Each structure stands twice: as structure tokens, then as C-alpha cells.
Length: 320
Image (cartoon, rainbow, N blue to C red):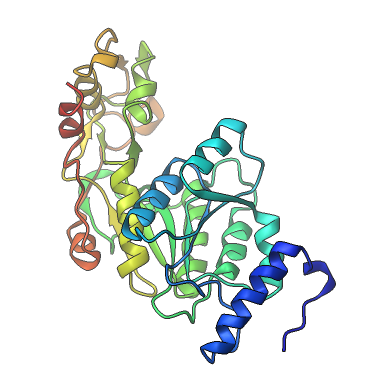
């Protein structure tokens, strides 16, 4: 028999608990699991562009229909909420999910794709999301999307999953979150710079006349859909405590990215900005290091992932 505390007695919660406990008792399970149905539900924490694309990928892989909960900290604007509904994502506030967790509900598949920017207590958000995860569920996984920016390399060298990490406030925030996830048996996917036609670095640069960065600085990228795809591959095939790295086949320089983007009709009238960062100079003259070259071969093999868009130029080809 199950004791439900007074703070948890919302009708939907009671109904889902009743359904889950019925399924659990029939199958001889003790605790309450949210995977009572045949299709595995997915909880996406931070249901932004990346999280919603991952939800779409997940639904395509489970055509019988499966529940996807999109968890946000604050109220999404009406447009985003309507889009989530249209995409078959059930919106939940973090506080609602946490109430369910206090009642003993857990989910086998959790994707944490909330950005650290504007989230003062990022480590706490990640720690609380780890509580949503039913780590004992067969096949379940927790995936945290981090950034390849945590890799320290700045002199044009090749980086892999094993490369040294750097310091600095943003990196340290992400690395603290990674550490918590890995300690709990989740896995981490470090993503290169994300882009769509209307999002990403080229969108900003092509609105500027001057950019105080090196023209030859290397930028590793991965299309948002490919990033969603790698997140789902990790949810399905990641190893406990695994660190993965996702980028397309080749980084481009800042200048090359702008030149490529200008081939697309949307940007045809734009001008490539002047990059004023010193090519040989130090960071204090807007130089900075030349960057890194990401080699994601190991990740591709380990979780069976390939980017659809092999390079940023190959993506632009589809728009021309």
C-alpha cells in the first residue's frame, strides 16, 4: 500500500500514481515508476530549441506515441507554449515535477538541455533534475548537454573527449554540473557551436561592421538537429559516466563562416564584417587563441551517431 503525503494530493498526480502503482503491483515492482506504459516517456528539462528538437527525434523513434514532458523554470511565452502543444510536448513547471518526485515518481529517460545563461543556480537545477531520474529503470539514462567550450585547447590543436578542460566562470559552472551528472551515473554530451539558418554566430556577425575577434579563429559547429540527434543517441546508447563530444566534420574560421552564410538568399545582401582581432596578437588585443579542432570520431563510434550536415557549408548548400 502507498502513503501519499498531503502536499501531493493533486488529482492528476493521484491518478497517475494509482495507474502506476496498479501497473507496478501487477508486474511485481515495488516503487512507483513513470514507465508503466509500453512507450518510454522522456522528460526534457529546459525545453528550448535543442530540447524540443530532441523531443521530436524521440517521438519519431517511438511512433506508437509516447509522453514527452517539457520542463521549464519560468512560464514560456504563449507562442512557445502553443508550439510545445503542437509538437505533442506536455508543459510542466519545475515545481510541479518536483512535487511528483517527492511523491516517489521517477522517469527512466531525462534530458537536461537548459542553458546556464541567466540561471544563477545552475548546479542546483542539475542536481534537482537528477532526482527526477529513475536510475534503476532498465535501459534508462540521464543525459546532460554541456559545451565543447570547456576544452582548454586554444592553439589550433585537436581535441577529443579526453582532452584537458579549462577554467573561467562559464567552464567552471558547466564542469561542476558535469561532475554531478557523471557521479550519479548519467552521461555528458559536449556540443560544438549550435546553429540553424536563423540562429548561431553568423546571424550576429552579419549584423556588425566590425567584430573585435580574429578572422582566422577556428569555430567548431554542429547543426541543432544533429545536436538533438546526438542527445537522443546518448539517451539510447550512452554509457554510465560517459563523456561524449559532438561536432561536424570540420571547423571553419569566423571569416569562412560569414562567407558561407552570405551564399544563402537570406544573407545575400549582408556584408562580411571586418574582424579586427590581431591574427598574431595576444588576447588583450582582441586576438585570443586560434581555437581548436574537434575530433568526434570516438563519440560517433560509441553511440552510433553521424551528423547529417557534415559542415556548415554543406548546410548552406541546402539553402542555395
